[in-house]
Image (cartoon, rainbow, N blue to C red):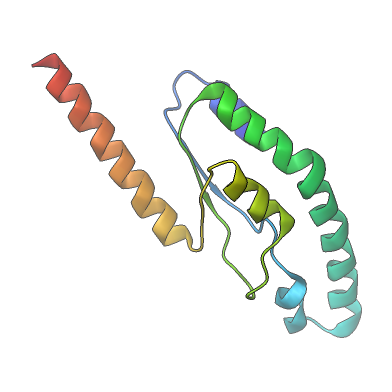
Length: 121
């Protein structure tokens, strides 16, 4: 996964990840039935993978590298996925919009810069 490479990079201070992690298949309703059904089937496979290997691995990497990882996964219905529950259980917030995630990252960056300035004084 490319997030691992970003977390390992000494020149990267934080990561913003936009995803459809755990998105229910309601999003596929906009497609013709033949395509929507195929996409929904693919999504089931991916959600099963996310809830086992993918999410667990990502959580382990986030904890290992100790860098801020801001996640955004816009909801497509009121349903909550196993993946989102797993993130929450591990203290990782998944923001509902990219805009909110970006705003949080901007605040964290500003806070870190202010702390650096104060420590030099």
